[in-house]
Image (cartoon, rainbow, N blue to C red; front, side, top):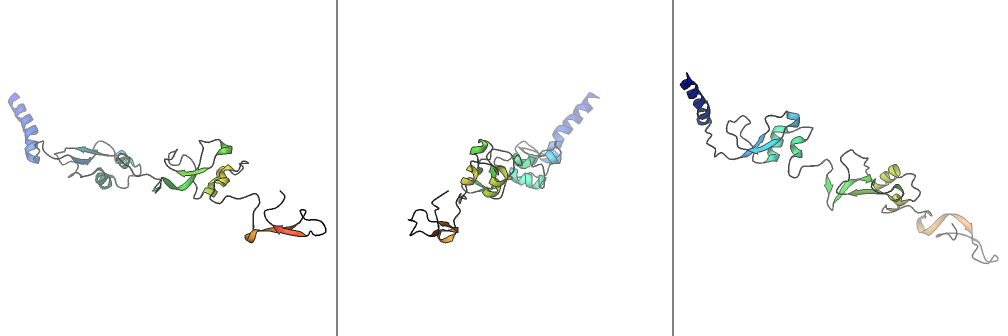
Length: 190
């Protein structure tokens, strides 16, 4: 009886190897993780002989795309050495959106579009333009710091084209007998 059991054991161990051609020299490849559910699945670099997970992949990215394409959790892609992000970058270390600078005191803060991001996706609001960000996050800021960081910040004395004010005012700098009204900027008063 023991001899039959031993023979069955050796047949199952060595026989399976012989059937699949597994001799321990097979190349390592990327295979989907077999023990995880698909939502949390990932790829491992290993040697497999039994073909349970297919022929394997030459890269981790190819494995993720082939076995876990459409995985909304992003677990497989997050294990890549340089995983894709939900915030694509623009050259120069800038992103194509603006976010409030919560690391600076509110009166002194503005909006940023620099990398690395000091937050995780959806941890704080983002805006398409710097002006939208300033209006939403720093709307009541009396220091005007956020608005002053705009490429063309607003001024307290808006000007019209041609350097003329939108109204007329008395010319107090000229003698009364020669004075009249002016509409030039900058204004001589505040």
